Length: 170
Length: 213
Image (cartoon, rainbow over all chains, first blue to last red; front, side):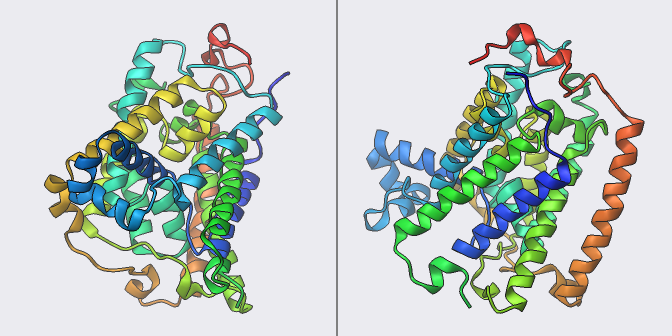
């Protein structure tokens, strides 16, 4: 199947906005992605080393009253994100294993920076209590100062750092 | 008032999780359709050749913002029951700068990384692995990072309060600013155009590496 072109960005943005609006209307929440990752980590640590999880001030709050960190709004939403992305990719003929990068960048280099980028991004997201979805996008939609400040910090610093990493992309 | 539905009707927890699944599917579908499953398209934002990120991001924020205000105006949504992000000044700025660095290195943010992994992008799978590692490192370094994370707490502060404007007027100003940015973005895309990147005939997509499934 030949790949279909991407949707018009303003239309895709409207759809994304409606997804966020339904999260607000149905559950009184915003969207999120890094939060779901955190709950997966908390759950894994709890399974591997229960003692460490219960002793730690960070992990223990997620195990109070017999709660299970995977039965959580953000984790289920993250699973939905995987399903929705897959459905869209399947309908548009975009499924396939591929390490996407510019022709002059080696596969290993791309994967090295992908790993490091993911590590830094989610570390920063835990600190800021949300990533581009949970803090910036959802935060702006409820007019929170945290949302606008986080958005400006993410995009502003990415523009500043872009010069140093230009060889990775152009 | 009928929304937020799960709070006002005191629905059981599993119904709220069903809502989460529905919202997640719509979220992933919209991201992938917009082209957010491609790191080179996302990175284009920072070199001017592809500003899809800005267009999708601000359109989405405005649709949700205006939609929520309209629902509230017609008595359908109680905005007091919708979560407003709490503002920790230092953490928001420091965390945002670390995220910006991660963005330009990795080419994804967490949501777009998961979305791209779902259609088989291997760089995105490695990105998500890095992300999970980052969450683990944060948990393990919590005692050390906690003072920074908790500093200068301002509560769920809203921007129109700080600026002394009504929420309606601020929303209007935001719409004007967004339209101006969309106009600039369209100009930038013409000026820094890279028709070789991200299109259907993009050699950077490495068709020889692609295993169709």
